[in-house]
Image (cartoon, rainbow, N blue to C red; front, top):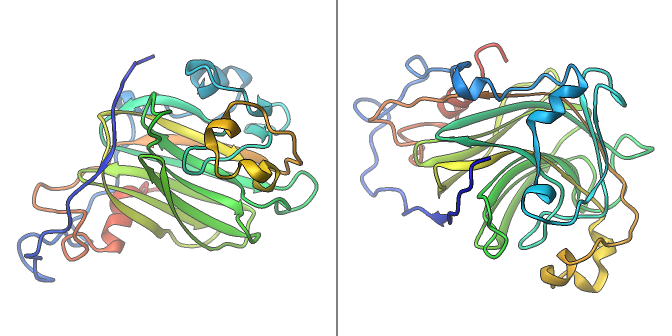
Length: 293
């Protein structure tokens, strides 16, 4: 495992001189390329076909000596040909930590997964802020948490997709309505931008968020699920105490993951992904989504 200590800080604002909608500096849809599979990043992809596939993934609680907030975890057992995860009462918000399975990967990354999040006995989780999906985190960032995620489930309302970036322990979430069931997610980094995308079953890819962020070369890329925020009660403003013990509560989430695939995105040198005139949303979606997805 790679040991990396790094911090995240927001990039500068978009340059004042934006390109026109045509001409130099603008990446058009016909010139944009889908990310490429294979290579050392492709070797991290996991189809979860057999139980041994779980050995490719690291648990944050093991690697950074945290409390194990996973109640159940297996591959090709509870759900055939899939990873299955049930979290204990937990949270990823500001300085709070929850379950996280990951691989250490370097450089520009597209992480693409097909995921279903449900309640234990219902189609949607019943407890507030019960969410599961993708996350990329700066290693060893307990004291100054830095990470980004895209998840689905229940926020203060059921049937939501939430994109979130956390810099120096301050989380900024954004959410939209979703019908639930199987969904595809992409969490990616290319050049000076990170982005979160989602697609409902049978639908089109949508850009949930793009963030002007600088992350270290190596990050932890993987899966998260957490549940039951209300059970933190009077500890909701005290992440140090909340992280120091396993909160007893009423967890209500189960997550099934069909696959996680890693690809390499590319942008031409003239394209600025922080400038929507240079790289419009539909172009960024193409750059960050697989050609066959």
